[in-house]
Image (tube, rainbow, N blue to C red):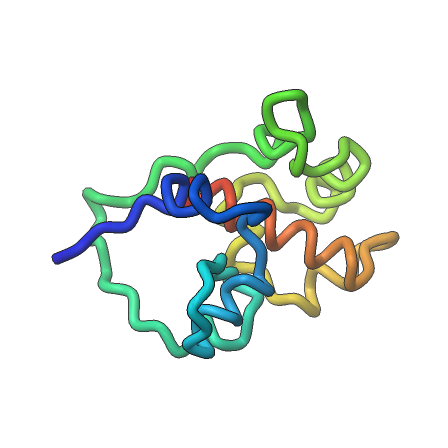
Length: 128
């Protein structure tokens, strides 16, 4: 079994950060590192082993407030987006990760660009 530390991979990839575009490049066998994002349609093609109940990622149960933009996390979500997600009933990172694009897009003032940002931030939180 192999494990990949995406942080280390991105450190040696000039100008790259974890995005769904980068994931698409990897899936298409491009010789360039990429991010795999759950909103990417190709994500469904990847078979991820079930970790079992005792191995659930602790980040998934964290409140979405930890995704806020900060000096340490400049690609985070704005307070406005976090408030809109919370008002729509999303409390944890898992809630958003499991939500469909259509459901998130139905939230007032969240369009395709905001959805892309939300998905990128969720992916980064889970994999970093």
